[in-house]
Image 1 (tube, one colour):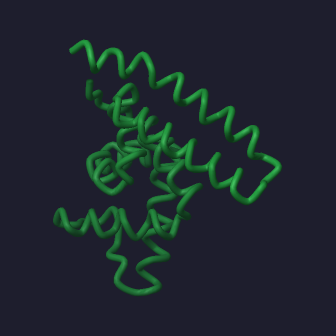
Image 2 (spheres, helix red, strand yellow; image 1 turned 180 degrees about the horizontal axis):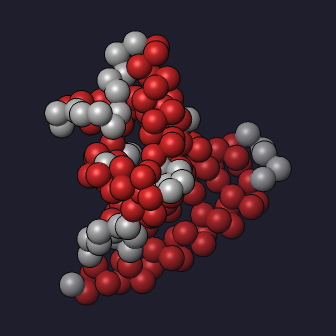
Length: 148
């Protein structure tokens, strides 16, 4: 079931995405999506290095939610955020119990475990345990889908 995430949840998703991809990537994707939708004053176009830097700083400030002014801006950019954010992060926000998200997490954990095992990484055991946990979490979801 699809839910509408709060501004705070979207901000946490943006922060998580930035932690993985970097604020520069996040700023450019936001600026591109914002401009595609007609643009405005909230996020400048990321057409050159200065624009990229400004977009990065602007998105970072807005989604820090440091005060009512930024909270209002983040609320205005909620749809842009959900369009710009990668699909898996969007699913985590809008459909946290979806079978697709659970399957993606299980595949990601299994892939990580197999990679660690292949290169004989000391963390292979931990990663395999995590993969098994994600597979176990997938069982009730699969049962629900099969019974539908």
